[in-house]
Amino acid sequence: MSEDRISVPLSDEKREFIAERIASGDYADEAEVLDAALALLEKRQKIEILRALIAEGDDDFERGDYMTFDEPGELTRYIVDNAEALK
Image (spheres, helix red, strand yellow):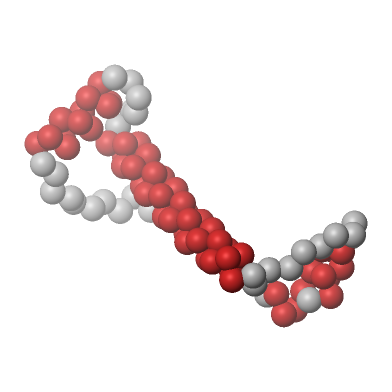
């Protein structure tokens, strides 16, 4: 992993918050605080993507644009038969 450094201006409130998190023992240093913040941003992005996909699925369902599979193995057969088209 590269040890490149970046410089980011922070408000006094943010600096104090970071210092408090480190002082509490929650994080060892500023890098750990930043890592945690970036991890949360990544999770938020994934949640936004999932919400958009759920909304798309809801819209499809409301339009009647869906399939049902009644017999055991029917979904598996559909996926195998259409694997190339589903990529």
